[in-house]
Image (cartoon, rainbow, N blue to C red; front, side):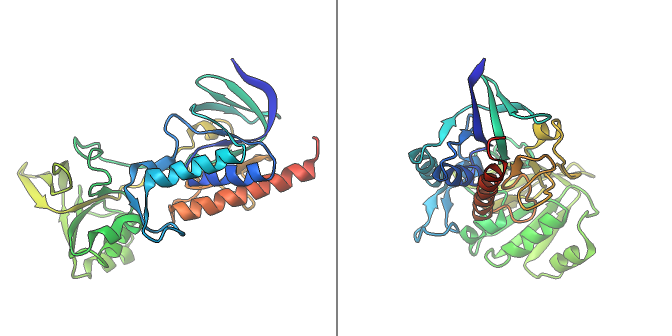
Length: 313
């Protein structure tokens, strides 16, 4: 079924800080954007508790409240929001086509802002305790773990960086890795090994996160002996990477790097003219809401300029 036959100026796919900021700027520029928000609008911040590092909120704000405010703000300026999931796109000719599980939409331009998902171990209580001691972002949540013991799961540069950062707050950080050897670069590993507040547990499998209302520890099994142990901790940080939500775009010819992140050609432009990018789909480095929002603004401004230059094409 057709969403309608009208060709939109811009379709924004994704409703995290990048997509919503893009929608805000596009709406205020009278572009009448269509925002495909997904079944769970708001992005990763919907799974967080208190956000204290987003500018303008002196006392902090709950993640879901912040995203709800953003959604109401873009709606106020006339953004059309649909809670559908984009299932495929057609970028081979114009107008571009975006298909959802319910309809098909057409647009002169598209902004991809579908974000990235943290990788998890899929433990029984891992998701249940997210926001209650379980996190995938030390720079977002490290402040909440002052003088607490935390564990960091992983063996790459991300794990070393997260662990080193967390020593600013935590009383002790334990890096837990399933192998004896680390994928991390020598300099990052050496830095972590030289930090007196960091210790290592290697060659173990994490089997669960413990705690009723908040994290109290993890359960591990020694890969050689099969011995089961409990490591006490008040924080659990997954540092085993992120997966950008770019599969349907790569299938439509959007260039991605070996890890799946969209490659930018010029500011926020992808390799396909008229398709723009914002947020964590392009950002494996910072992964911050304020950075994603800033890029959403950039993408909308680039779309506005692109459409003005193209006129009625």
